[in-house]
Length: 253
Ligand code: CO8
Image 1 (cartoon, rainbow, N blue to C red):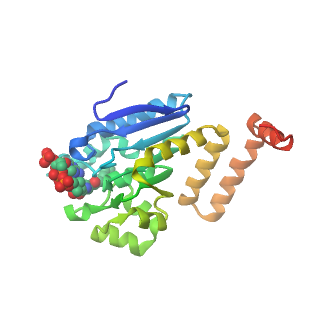
Image 2: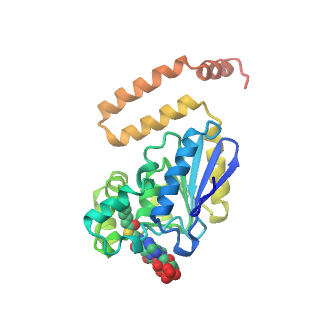
Image 3: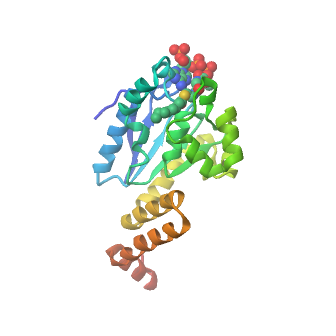
């Protein structure tokens, strides 16, 4: 299927790539794009040949936030209806396979909030992250206040939400927002390499690992440890675990 606002690519075996593609608007997230994003993710959900999905933008921007032209002048009821017509706002957080977001240029407002829903976030040198909604008289509404506060702590989260403080790639790395900062001209290749490596790993273990780490963010330690045990033990019944441990002991591949 072809999309109006997304490009779909297959960069390597087991890896799908969704590129946000509204270049004239810095990939601002309009309803069309968010609807297409939900459809593209659902297609990858059903596609057994794809194990990991990369979500990215252009060299200039991941996304400059929600489309302000669509939101301007809306009442709260109309905004609720707009959000409900755009399932892409939550589709990444409910997607079952690992997602990697690679950000070059900027991830602002809702763009940053989409990036925060991905499992792994990589940044190009010079990338900028910010929640500028306060400059429009509102606040982040796609999880930004909650996910940023959990990542960076209260004080910096308050500066970002209350004063639109931008965070550059190096600071994003030091605060745990991204896991790697990569030279801009190598970002795509390194992202694909990481996705490709994860795609080769035992699927049941990858799924269990993703669910456990995400659970850690949402639960108490006690609940998370219980969840981990329940995810860990069944892996011993998988052929992959039996064969991979056997291969280690027999020094074979
Ligand atoms: N929405 C709509 N259009 C945009 C957006 C946007 N977010 N960002 C850029 N554009 C458009 C501009 O209107 C302009 O269009 P045109 O050429 O037709 O005039 C074009 O892109 C180029 O933009 P600029 O001329 O402004 O280019 P600059 O290089 O000077 O600046 C910036 C680029 C820095 C990206 C600047 O455009 C900017 O600050 N954009 C707005 C960023 C922002 O405030 N984002 C937050 C939006 S609010 C939000 O995301 C709320 C999310 C809540 C989600 C809740 C749902 C569940």
